[in-house]
Amino acid sequence: MCNMNALCPIKEGPCSCITKLQIQFIPMINEDFNNPFMLNRLIRIMDQQVEELKQISEIAKKVLDTITNSKKIISDQSDSPIVNSGELCSRGGILRFLRFNLTPHSLNIQFTDMPPNPAYKDRCFSFSVFIADQENKKIFLQEKLFLKIMLFTCQTPIQPLKMSTSGDQILLGNIQTEGNSDFHFKKVIIKEVSSRFLHGNFFFVIAPQNAEFIRPLIMKDFIVKSRKCPHDLIDKHMKIDDGTIDD
View (cartoon, rainbow, N blue to C red):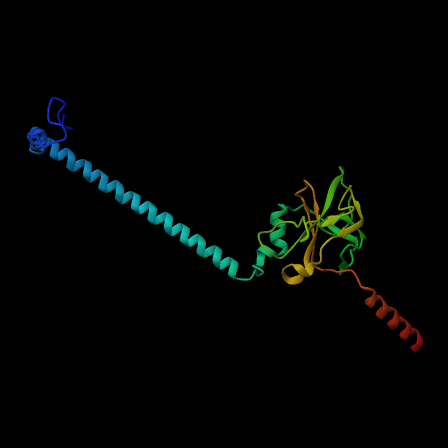
């Protein structure tokens, strides 16, 4: 039998089955295309598909433009050096980050004795602060609170430094203490030099925990250097000896 007709006795040979099959389909096709309702329906479907393709094209164009602009912004940011953007890298920016709420009855933090500036990496130091009113007079709080040391850089976005460039915790020792008037920070250690960061200095901050009515103490231009080498100590002793001889 042939492939077009199971009743055809001819095997894989020329026969008229294919011609008869085509003749049977032609009237059906012509009838559909001559039907106005069918033509209108096809036209509407085609119009809808064209509109959908236009919408997809517009969406794809917007997505492509967004991706292109994002890549351009990232490229510009990576190529340009980090600069001090003014208010964001200032005391005001840090105060906003710490959510300090200025009120007529706001308190502040004052140094009793200041930390060394410059300080030295891995060398401990101690200092004290106290709570003061707007006239900088010492006051005693009814409830105790915690004060915490933080380090900030001039870079944005504003975030306290937690890790050094080598992956160590950047602040060690007594970096948080409790009290109601006087606070003592003992044996504080900084594990990073400030020269690795923008402008070569830190913001050294003493911030109250859960007390937005107390203004954090912000020490600008705080420098941390590497530990003094023996050569520096020898030069220092030589200068002292020279001064003694001159006297």
